[in-house]
Length: 112
Length: 238
Image (cartoon, each protein chain N blue to C red):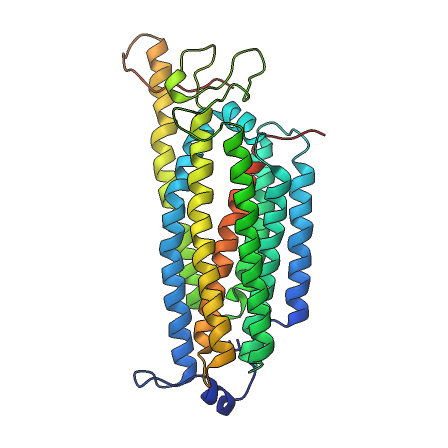
């Protein structure tokens, strides 16, 4: 539990972070359609994990630190998933509306 | 976190009466900081949710509007923050080994990089506001054009070929980067405080150094997500 990273390991992590940053900017030149979001998020999550586990020492800490960091992530997911299940399911009513069975005024959503 | 012997730690870190050992004291300090960071995740989480809703509702608007942000400055700023985070991580290690003078220099470098981040951010705000993208009555969003005609104008000007929603994106841009910049400002103040007590005080708290370090890494972490969300939402061909 009292293990710690060395400065050279931190330098390697910094190098990886720079590579990921360069990678995400280069990749952003190309259009992957709907996948673009997930590609950009993949790079961001890679950088985030390096920072959390090495710079923030979660890899070297007691398990309860990982638990608390994970709990923060879990609550964020509850916030996002809970909100999105409302917004995304509103389209189901919209689809019904087109068939003329339900008349509910819905916020505009742009067509892709 | 630290390698030095227990006796060396004793000089650095006073043991408070309500803890049995220094290790217990340190674990409590670390865990407490993570609880605070958890609340920060939710603080930023709400505005992230706002972004997700706007992007989900108006994907083309977000993609087009994001191409009008300064990608070069944004990339430089990301590199600056990631590098400053490395210096802080190294400083926490050195401070743990009792090398407080070397650690203080690294913290000062990191704080200066934080200031550099804010200066670059200010330059960028100036450019974006000059383009007329600041949300409000004076916003001119004709430049955010849409393939197939029309433009994503201000909310108040809706009714064109495409309903105007670009203002929402710039509103999110200014709020997200604004509250993040506030965190950077607080982080720079904390780093300056750490640098001062590393240099001046006969004793210092390693836990304080480590926790300020955690705060700085968290500020970095938020930016790691803000950068692709705001600057890379729309692809930018050469």
